[in-house]
Length: 171
Image (cartoon, rainbow, N blue to C red; front, side, top):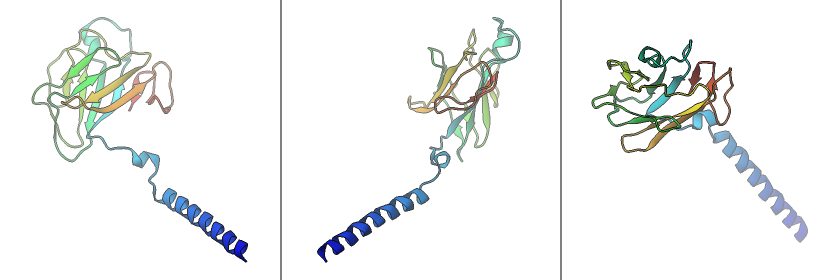
């Protein structure tokens, strides 16, 4: 009789543990929904515009990265930065603001800043055609997002890189 009680107790303990696991799986959000929402999201990196890579500003400005304000408030981006995997760094100019839901394009070359486009003022290409990593940081140096891509031919997203075409990384 004692062994029968112990067997029932073990069965109930196993059953309870199984129910807890099943219940937690049912409550947990899918991985995509569990992702942290960033106020400033890298949308895409246009790393290899068509044509040859000439060393001219008119070609540098064809290369760009886009960021989007995914929050509900206007972001003041003064001092925020964008970096590649190497030493290149862009700092948003004083007074740069991005309204909720809006996208801002940062072009590699030199040009006149507007509300929808700012210029890196770099004297060369930033984003490597063979692959790179775009990273955004707050004005206090906190990493917001990292977007790695492999260039070349059409690639599907993996756990380490985002989806790309021959010219664009979609972050």
